[in-house]
Length: 396
Image (cartoon, rainbow, N blue to C red):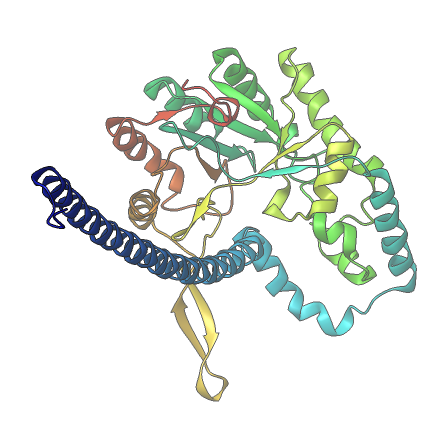
């Protein structure tokens, strides 16, 4: 028998050989694919780890940056809170420096102040007053607000309302703790308030009867200061007196107009704290209206700063005349309002502006800037509305 493979066997061997080569090729290919996959997966994992580490580093940097920004904003808010009170309030504090040496705490008033503050804390549990500095920033609406003061500029304001078809808000006060004199005892004031109410273009808020500095009237422990300074209540200002201060203004307005006063109020000099706000919420007044502020400053226009120049002690105790840093001319005020608007990310949307209707300033009165200011803002698309309208969620 021949040992040589037959033709058929040879063909089978060739086929097996070819199959073996194909299998070997497939194995090599599979190994290469496996290697590529492993390398790709390893690369992806490494890339993922690098991305994750980078992201975590970015998050850490972002958190640090946000913490820094929060601290800066918190500092800015604290500075704003400290500077919210009006320039009039700051002038009062400077005035009282002269009384400091002879104004030690009185034991009676100290006890009264402590007892009253404790009572206010108990009486206001569950009440939260709001201090509103700005309206809705979504719409080009401005709230021109006025504190009554002496009232001598009421006729001018009424004329502007008619001429320019604007709406305003006026906060009413007798301006002094008296039953025989004050802004509410001037016949012309009462007549014009009544006319304003009939136009339906003026909203009225409460500015208290006596125009006390509330923060100081709650906390002052010096009998001498309470006696000498007319803007301090003679007795510790308690909750019943706060309610009476508001009610007397409500009654005058109701008797004049047969309407109810709105529940917006503004305390004199911006002299507030949260306890005082909560106390007013407890007697039905939740919304305290301050005025707007941004990085350029306050919209409490200094129409009550009447001295352009002041005395300052120079070298050797010699008096020198210097410019009053708080005094603004009409032109300076208009320029300031332009800068305020252009520097704010929302322009003057929702801005609350404070002015006064009468005061010690007799020349270059700031109320006379209003025609130019109103026309300029109107051309830019702003509307002058009441506080109720500037605070709501609709375009009025």
